[in-house]
Every structure is written in structure tokens, then in C-alpha cells.
Amino acid sequence: MTNDYKQFTQQIHTKIGINLNLYKESQMKRRLDALRIKRGFQNYDSYFQALNKDVKLLKEFTDRITINVSEFYRNPKRWETLQHKVLPYLMTDRKKLTIWSAACSTGEEPYSLAILLTKYFPEITFEIIATDLDDIVLRKAKQGIYQESALNDLPSELKREFFIEKHGLFHIDSILKRNITFKQHNLLADHYPRNMDLIVCRNVLIYFTDEAKKQVYRNFANALRKNGILFVGSTEQIFNPAQFNFSIFDSFFYEKTR
Image 1 (cartoon, rainbow, N blue to C red):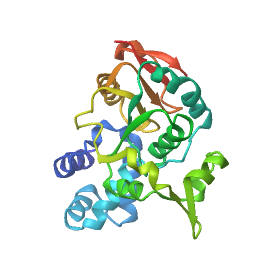
Image 2 (image 1 turned 90 degrees about the horizontal axis):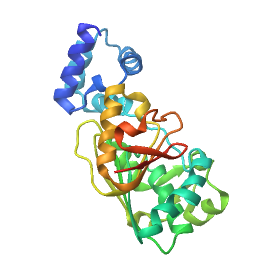
Image 3 (image 1 turned 30 degrees about the vertical axis):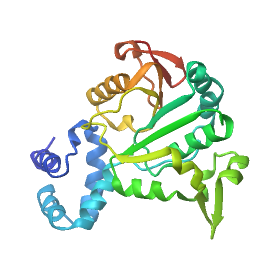
Image 4 (image 1 turned 60 degrees about the horizontal axis):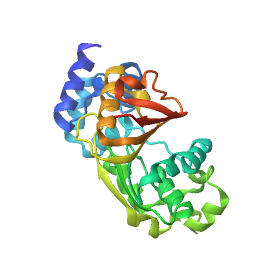
């Protein structure tokens, strides 16, 4: 790590509370180098001085370091497993589920959960906490308005039932918003909720260092009730789940054992 970049990470941590050292340096630095050069700054010192003065530049920077790519029913086979195996298991001894969609981006994931539960498990009461580091994407999530491309993997029946098309944009049915609370949350710094039945955190941890991943997995385990389930992304397999008090429930689903 160059002294210039090291000082920059310390300044950013102090200013906005995001520790860039917990992300994989090669990936993060590549993203930020491209942005810094694009804006015409020769080094990180001059870039930080500009970020300190320009609110729009700082928002652009924050948006770049957070990962905001999502779709409804991303990786459909995993959602089939969730519907047919995971949720019935979680419902064996309860009539209400508390779910955390961590790093929810622009809301496709928590809304997908709400669609699935509303459509196929109408007898169940549920609460979804949807969090992200970026307050800009959270505002977009609360609006619930999407391009059609975000719905590519969503079954057509669900698309017709839970969306209203207006001028080429798809508006989520307001009934789905009743059970979702959107909040800002930093996975690497903030306190975690407790007694979750299901935690969904997908395609985010791949950007974290190994040590940061381990800490997040420990925190997820503490946030789940016994026999609760963690649902991760298709590139985020946990190779030694027992060290975090998890066992394999299914591909990319992990059960808290104690």
C-alpha cells in the first residue's frame, strides 16, 4: 500500500466511518484509481481535499465504493430452494419470521423476499429489515421503481401480480412495503440485530478481506437464533462453516447450530 493511498484510507475512515482496509485492496484501489483519474486528480491527497469540499464528489465516491448491483430473484434456483426447503423448515415451529436483508442495495432482494412470502406463504406473518451502507440506494429502494431489466429472472406471474407498469418503469405494489423497514447499516462497523430467523447477504462479502469476512460471519451467527439460516451468494461459499457455529443446510444456505 502506497503512503498516499494509506493516508487517504485513514482520512476517509475519519470522515465518513468507512474502513477501506477491510476491503480487498487490489479491487478497491483499482475502482478508486479509475474514479480519481477520471476526475482529473493526480494523487489521493488532492482527491481527498476535493472530497472534503464538494458534496457531489463525495456522494459519487461513496456510491463507487459500495456495490449496487442487484436483480429480482437473482440466481432463480437458489430462490426455489428458499421457497421449497428453507422457508418450510423455518416455519415448522413458528408463525412469524424475522428476516434481515443485509447490503440490500436498491431493494430487489427484500422485495423478492416479500413477494415470495406474500404469494406462497400467506398464513405467515413476516418482518423484513433491509439495510445498506449507502443512503442513496436506500432512498431508491424505498421508492420501489425499477427498469424492466431488473425483473428478468422474476417469473412472469409474479411480475404481473406485484408490479404496475407506468411509462416503461415497474412500480412495486405498495402492499409489499408494509413489512419492510429500510435502514442504513455498515456491516464492518455497526451493531447487528438479534434473533433473526433468516439472514440474506449475497454478492457483497467477496469484496472484503478474509479477516473482515470472518468477523462478519461471526456477527451473522450471533444475529441468528438457533437453527436460523444464512443465505449467501453463489461466489461466497463458507469453506469451514463449523468455526462460525454453522452447518451446511443446502448449497449456499447455512444453519446456525448453537
